[in-house]
Image (cartoon, rainbow, N blue to C red; front, side, top):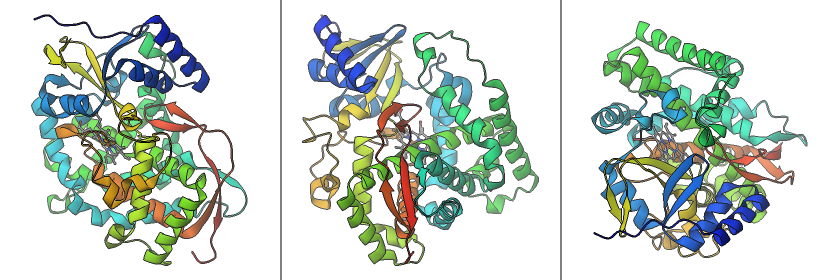
Length: 438
Ligand code: HEM
């Protein structure tokens, strides 16, 4: 069979991409240029980083659903494997499926009602420390505190508050370890400064496991840590799952919540509409699970934020055996990336793709969105295990904040940063004045 070779950018396209990259100081801007010129499959080469980019609904379905078993997640050279070892995110095959099955009940929709109170209480614990006046607050850090407390309380049944300050740097360092950096271009680059912080992280997780084992009660083990112990996993494997969930489950929600606050405060009409909805549904009482279906407009705001700034903006895989996509051979062993960001900004599927417009997700408009054109939580059997948790958590935390605070953005420049997630850089400074009614 005569296979065409996968397109690589020519000199003119590369120059245009370089200009976009320099102008916007962002690799995603360059990827948009490549996508616009080369379509749904192209080669990406940046020093030692080499990948085949697959873009669009058909490509997403190909990687995530129809050929899912022919793509492997685990890449031994990737720091995320060094950090998470045998965590569910970086294993494949039976091992992955077994781990996912073990954790699933704690993240299932049915389990979420039990977490709602912890979610708004974690929000209150952090917002009660806000000045409540004209002093501005950096929301990326604040949202991280809330999502960390929420996750550790809900899924490990541990109160992180007393250790939050001590664990702050180890957590940030763990995230920095897996964020894109020089190691992508130069795999052997020395990475000093991590060992001590990662050891503190490990000591903390192993201590949590020991403490729980000491009082373990199989009758009362529905949380994620309880399920892992009940499932007979050893300490090393449980540590790997806890660290995976800790990072995957809070860094994403942190980015989402901060982007929502940024987009709301830069679109005051949307902010007022969302806040009015919260006031009507909740008044001043704390949110409950039953309220969430009535916070429809807030849901649309969250959906549209996930479209514009998907916290996980791409997925990386290794091709397990030669595959053909649209007539092109994807050779075994090559790295393939599917792009959530490019899918969400594709003008073929999203009119005015860079405009923030929550009405795209109204009940009527939502029906017109093509399958796999919108996939903030990935898709197929390896989609995000925390989808329901993340969506409930976002609504509860945002509703609680809107109910209690009037928010004003301070107006500084904000850029997209490709960290472990897609974050607003340098964070988002907001003035949060406590409402008299809240
Ligand atoms: C706004 C919130 C979140 C977003 C946008 C998000 C996004 C994603 C995406 C796109 C994937 C698939 C990546 C790929 O195909 O390579 C994924 C996987 C995953 N997510 Fe999330 N996530 C969020 C919240 C959470 C939460 C709350 C948890 C846990 C409590 C979690 C745990 C995981 C895990 C363990 C995986 C790997 C699943 C597997 O490989 O079977 N995520 N997430």
